[in-house]
Length: 279
Image (cartoon, rainbow, N blue to C red; front, side, top):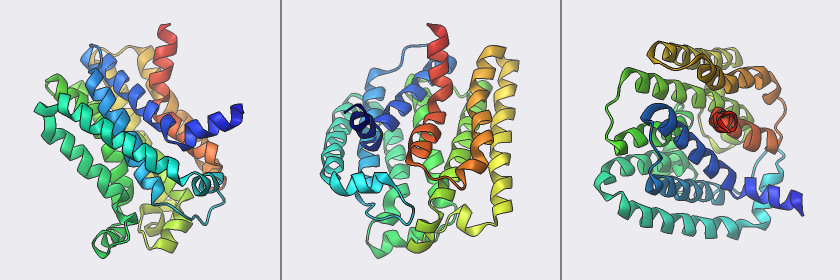
C-alpha cells in the first residue's frame, strides 16, 4: 500500500509540483526576504499539475523500459482528471494575479512549447526539428516560473545578486535536462525530435553538461560578494555536486526513480536543505 501511494505521488506529478513550490519559497527567502505570494504558489502548483498531466497524457509509448509508462496506460484517466483540476486551479488563481496577466501568459506559452511537439498536428510536429527547443524551453520555464516571476510579482528590481541567482538556476536546470535527454534519446530519435543529445556527439554533450554546471557554480560563488553566507552557498552547490557525481551512471541506468525522484528532486534539494537546517 505504501509503495502504491508513493508511486502515485511521483507518477501523478504531485511530487514535481511540490518541487516547484519549494523552489519558489527559496526565491522569496533568499532574494525577496518576504513570505511567498500564496496566489502565485497556488497558480504555479496548479499550472505544474496541468502542464505535466497534459504532457504525460500525450505520451503513450517508450523504447526505454519504464514502469511509469505501464502505470500511465492503466491510469491514463488520472492525468486527464488532474489536467482539468490543474486548469481550473490556474483559472482561479489567475484571477487574483490579474494585474500580472502578461507575465503569466509568457510562462504559459513557454510551457506549451515544450509539450507542443507531441501534439499530432503538422504545425506542432515541425517543432521537433528544433534541436535546442526541448531542453531550452523546459529549463527556461522552470527558471522563469521559480525565480523571475516571483521577483516581478513582488515588484522588486533585478539587482546583481538576483540576476546571478536567475542565471545560475537556469544553467543548473539545463544540466539536469541534459541528463533527461540521454534517457529520452531513443524515443526522441524514433519520434524525429532533435535534441542536443541526438545532435551533438557524446563528448560534446559531456562538455555542455559540465559547462552548464560550471556557470551555475560561478554564479553561485559570486553571490558571496553580495551578502550570501558561506553555508548558504554550500547548500546551493550540493545538488550540482551530486549531479556531477551521478552523471555517468545516469547515462546507462534509466530507473524511473533515479530520474523522476532523484534528478527532479535535485532541482529543489537545496531549498529543502535550507528548510531542514533552519528547523
